Image (cartoon, rainbow, N blue to C red; front, side, top):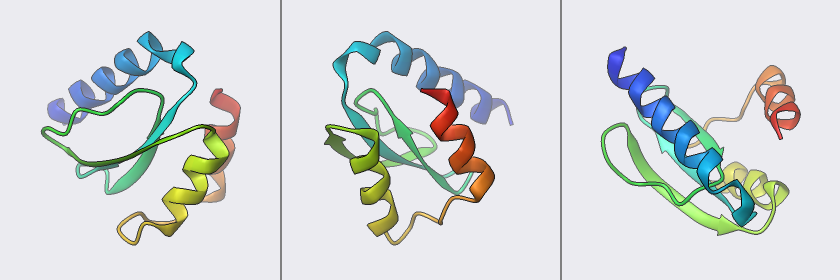
Length: 86
């Protein structure tokens, strides 16, 4: 659980630091079994086991995530949270 919190904190911190870039990446998180869309170039260590991108828009990253076989489809609640976050 501690590793998950640290990984999430690092993702959030690195995402907010480079928010002005306007690029998006799809990353696979082994701890949660999900794929997230982030705004910074991911560092592939620990629970982050792949990164794909960059994409010029969040919509492009969502489309790419839907084509990656190891990424489960997000639930409607997760999609709503993603759209409301940025």
